[in-house]
Length: 262
Image (cartoon, rainbow, N blue to C red; front, side, top):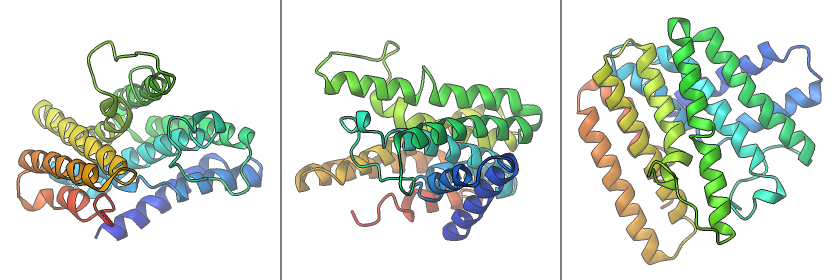
């Protein structure tokens, strides 16, 4: 089930790029393809489809948000391959074949813009809110602010988030929150379900952050981090419940790449 959805999401993202980039040079289009094809955040994006199903709609209802979430994350990730970001995260693989810095910058910026365009065209009556939430997830209150905070910390500057949020929340949690809440929004969820979907996304995003951290730490720290990640998934599961509509949520939480090989 999850592998099929990953394939469908990959096809949908490539299709969106092809439709929007039909008149751009072939090498640049290939670079955009490479960024999203190599993204390792498919599960985060598919929270949008899981949220739509959880709200009683087909999984496909949330696909526009899943596509946008993947583009947003891939656009940020390709920027992190630039030399100046090595101090922040040296685990990001090269996303573009024969990469050069200029292409990485252009491809990342293009994917962020394409994500916004995709939401505007496919968000229906919720397009404005989805665009606002996408900006929140990535901009000055989201992942870019989180990366700036991490850069300050690497340079031994004491920096904190003004509103008290933790680094994990504004880096990985915000993209996951956007995906889950966006999928619920397209499914016509109530305000309560929208809030719950956002919380599920934040918990899942934090778990993802901890798992990634565990893969580059000592065995003892790895056990502690994985225990905390699984605890967060249990908290998310308590919100989703155990009805059939929550099956995809649970598949992403427990059967995905989050916990493989750890």
